[in-house]
Image 1 (tube, helix red, strand yellow):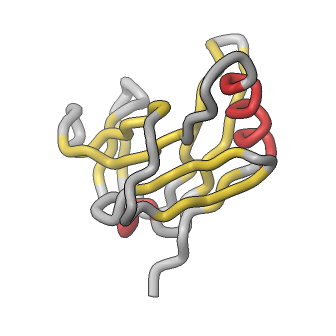
Image 2 (image 1 turned 30 degrees about the vertical axis):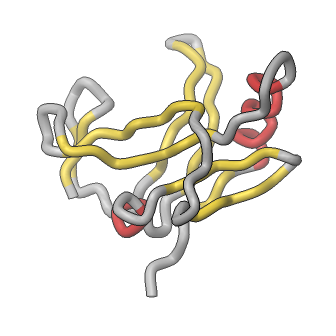
Length: 107
């Protein structure tokens, strides 16, 4: 059985900040084909679907569709705020290589 992805408290806190001024929507984390290495992440605010895995914390939700779930097994979804920018990040143990662009990877 695959280990589900985990979401850090920092990521849930940032999602709460994003949702503070409007409709509370889950953060969708998905894996899509494309990019220069074969796969890329799709991270966006979306609605939860019936068959999604729902990860909850701090009154917020992160959702993962069943097709993306095996690709994200054991991954950690976090939020970083660095000099180069602030963004949600994914530390994915399934990635075998990534592209210099930082958004594309191979499994």
